[in-house]
Image 1 (cartoon, rainbow, N blue to C red):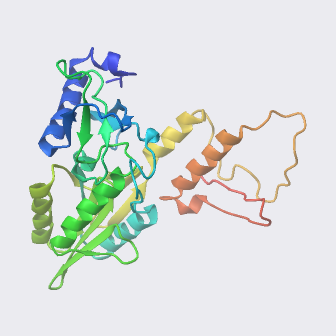
Image 2: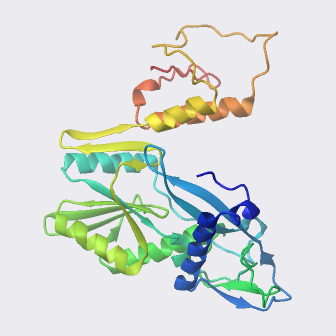
Image 3: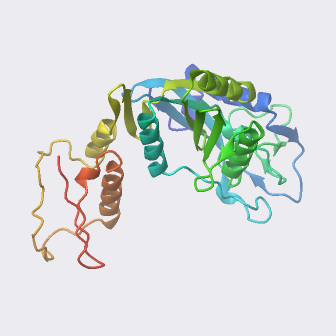
Length: 326
């Protein structure tokens, strides 16, 4: 199903109306806000709808997601927010966790917190406009005062992290000293390991009973979507088998080829000679710096599953040669 370009197009589609209503129902259940008269001495932060099709590892649409987002770029520091920093798991940490689980012969699973930021309590006095297309007909001039965080607010990630980490620590989990997005709990010789990436949670245990216990603990406190065995995360396609854990980025690679118009290119074992001396082509077409940097950054992310495709030859501070191997 095509993602709508705006609220007007979404309001013409019953499926997207249902998705928006589901989002607002989450607000009511979580007691996110209260409709109040517009204050005279406070800025009002606008809101907008963001529409996304949720895809699985094969690229098939599994559900529609409509999210109401605050226009956080209009917030003023010291008035609308104070602290905003929240730790996020690095890709290297995810790889280490996969390797650890493989070595200790247990599988990792994934769950998603529905509207996670709506669980984070905010301390500041923040007001937002009514959601487009769903204004209260009897109080159109009123605004919402927030009790919980809203996607788009600058303090939202921090508020959610503090809420989740406090809950886990209260239940006996210990936070990592180096990686503060990692939480561990020992019970005898067994271990539960939990890795947080914003609203995605990867977890596993050396004991199936502890795995079930953690699942029930989370669903008792938050609205969760259980996604089963970890198969797709941050562009990584993951296969956990008895023979080992295998990573690849086939879907991500195809997206790159399509994005940069290289779908018809022929594969080569070494696209460029490693000893070639490169001179400026005075008559050539100017290079788009933004496109070039985007390509290099995308290729670097591809090395998450294929470190063998990266070969750096740094002979000066200005020359880095990247050689791809198909």
